[in-house]
Length: 61
Image 1 (spheres, one colour):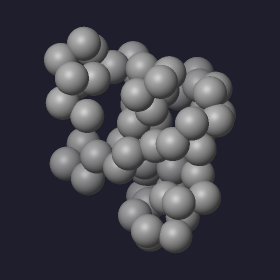
Image 2 (image 1 turned 135 degrees about the horizontal axis):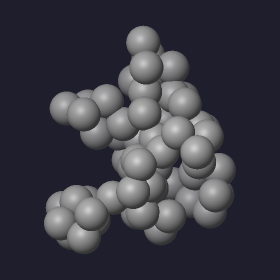
Image 3 (image 1 turned 90 degrees about the vertical axis):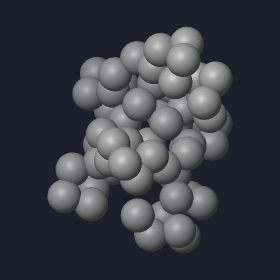
Image 4 (image 1 turned 180 degrees about the vertical axis):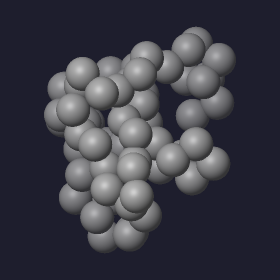
């Protein structure tokens, strides 16, 4: 994930910052408790495509 792109992207639901999870290929929003997928290097910034983060995942952020 390009560092400059990550600085520009925000969570579409909360407009808050995102954290890139390289291992799982996701952009994580702590505030929204959502993980947005990154497919073939393209972030899918749709709430309907995101999965909910567990309490354990949130604590790890």
